[in-house]
Amino acid sequence: MTEAQPTTRKRGAKKTPPRFSREQPDVRRAMLIEAATRCLSVGGIGAFTVDRICKEAGVSRGLINHHFEGRDGLLVEVYKSSLYASVNNQIAEAKRRRAEKSDWPPEASLAALVQSNFSPDYFSRDNLLIWLSLWGEIAVNPRLKAAHRELYDAYRAELAEDIAAVALPRGRDVDAPTLARNFIALVDGLWLEWCLDESVVTPQAAEAAGFEMLEAQVGPLRG
Image: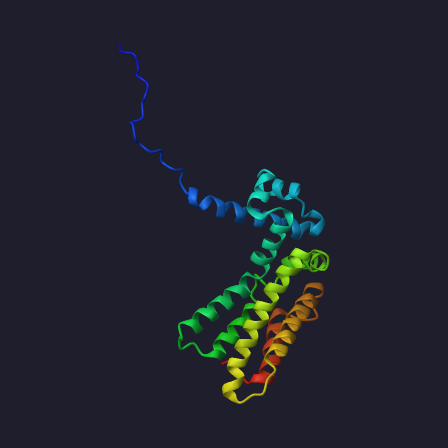
């Protein structure tokens, strides 16, 4: 019986890279954002600690610093990724269609942006503690305040642009930036009322109120 010979690797042969190795950083980032969001939704800003998030995600502390530059960096990403995702998708879609000069009418663009505010993922009670925690943190955290200003300004500017694109061809004299600001405030207020007491307003009634505010200034948007 011959002795088993050790397996040798041919000279010049390359190791096969781990499967999905390129996706791993993105997967880890998403995993940490999701874990951090869960911590925030359950325990508020007091639960948003590196130790608790790492325990929730099942990772080491070093990954947060590696991917997000610490706790505040992760907090900013939670704000961007979790709370503005639906609206940001609509903003990106509107910009893409305008760049391509598609035949998508401005009324459809504005209506889609309005409706994105009332999607189940965005207009949700699950976000209540997250929003309340972040609103409070924005007041005292310069980095989060800067991120909020960037996101709010981009959203308000896109909404104002869509409002003007509808109003001008119709001969409507509208202060689009002010109307956009008022619409955002209306959505926030109605969502908060619904979260605190569902007998006050329903998501459907809130969406109708949003359309009514805009349509009073720019004319019909709904078919």
